[in-house]
Length: 188
Figure (tube, rainbow, N blue to C red):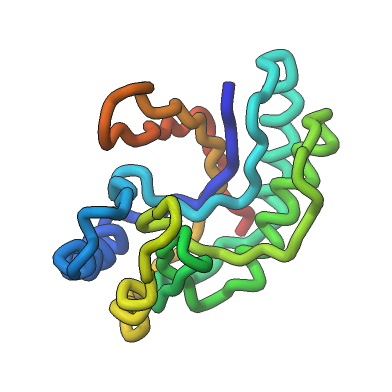
């Protein structure tokens, strides 16, 4: 199964961001972007790819330990930007350092559980993907439309293990579906 760890924003934070994204989706050219569904909005901490089910018990144990080692912390959805001409994203403010440490622990726990991580470790850049483009579009107006966005603060209190179900092949506009398979409270 295809897995990753994530922090899921609460419904109130999603609603605030959704209002701003609604305005972005009315900009010229927005129909050419592939907008993510708000039900799937998350901050990926570590992407694992395909994971053998036999590794799940050890992975669960490692992630539970990782969650206990990190305190709950406060963040807010804030600002945004773009990755070249490929992705429009919302950013985060607040205790970004704690979020980064949690991401590092989620990755290290997976390695210790025996998962082969295909990507080399890199500095964590917390972001919530809002739209993707195959290239050629000018994403600057969308990034500019997020510059002054500032959502309400909320507490990150849980580490989630999420299964990604790929979109249905051949269905225009199909989106991946995400399913939380396990979650652990952060330590106090």
